[in-house]
Length: 357
Image (cartoon, rainbow, N blue to C red; front, side, top):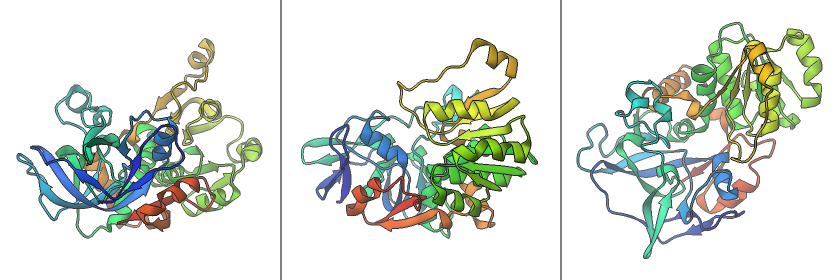
């Protein structure tokens, strides 16, 4: 079968292989025929080394499809069911899942596993997902059943970008009605965060980005204001005065914008880091300012979501017209166009590209 394979790191290109096979299904496994996969910036981060991943590996972690086969012991899904693949699913048994009520931090299903083969070579699947392939095998806990009437292309987006952004606003930052929010970065995750802030009832939602085209688009998804970074101080003074925003959501993944998010937050407000940064990239806070400002600085992994309930919660918001998923699909491609998709990921007119299998 066809798949896009990471063969070295760093690299600017994936190899499109037509001789990829799956290992035998085992107890607790679910085999899924992928219908659509989103192309996420985290895939690019695996290619450039920001996210550690040992090649060879099939990339892709934002997918939806149809169950083909289940292993022994799997009862919550059956062949023919529609599912979203969760790239970091909860096991349901560890302290994070049971006692701490933070199932998004469970690592049991996150580690990359050797699901694929290329001849005699073992090929891993990115985060146990590997959705840049016509079929994949995932742990049962990663196959989240959804209603069959939900289009699988929009469902795929919920697998990562939508949950990361919307969840950051609703679950992690816990944006409140009537509050002021600044979202730094108006890409796919930023647009999802903007929508999450709007769903939460924020009164002012300011999108900040270097690309004017992205700013125009941000307003269509719920931003009340959209500004270039150089124009932010004046806009901030006009919109909320000099106190800072109640909530700042950083959706880029740079230490400079993380520090900016903290600075833009009012005393007692919340700065939420959503973007994935490099391990060696750091920023500093003085010992005094964190104490004196009483600001909350929090990371948001996978939108603080419990995928077992939040995936379908977000799809209900989509069905009710409160969450625009179809509008987030900027371009449709085939798997052999993946390298072109990677190269134009930062373009102003791209929110999400979706692979149609």
